[in-house]
Amino acid sequence: WYTLRWHIEVYFKVLKSGTKVEQARFQTKDRLLRYIALLSVIAWRLYYMTLLNRHIPEADCTQVVTEHEWRALYAVTHKTRTFPKKTPTVAQVVLWIAKLGGFLGRPSDGPPGVTVLWRGWQRLTDISNTFALFDELGEKHTS
Image (cartoon, rainbow, N blue to C red; front, side, top):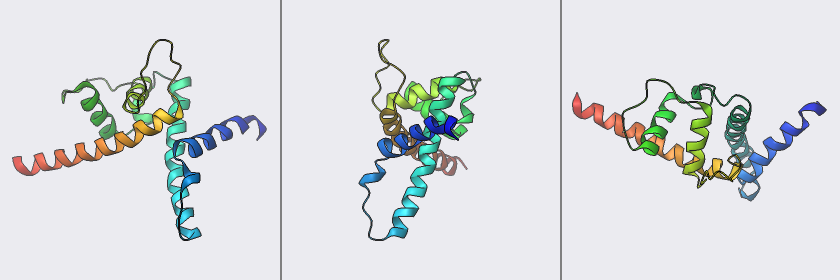
């Protein structure tokens, strides 16, 4: 297990720094545990995304986001509803999410960190939900 210790440390950094789980205040232990469980899944997803971005950046982005999420992300970052025929890579999607979170992406900047990815992920969630709503409303008006 010691060889995996660093991964565990980084995962908990994502959980603590990104989600700010330690600042949560709840009336009952049960509510806090459910909240931590939910944030743990999100933290794992962000950690997995950064890990894949470092080791297999050319992988298909559907390894880390749903098709709906990457399409919403693409539409917002490129200001178009015309999507590429080829699915974007993990590296492209991570960069787009990081930019939503405030990452500038200058040549001197390192890879996106946990904080900008977390902020970008929160924005992507809102964007993705709005995108789904507009798609649904559009289908109702055309049928």
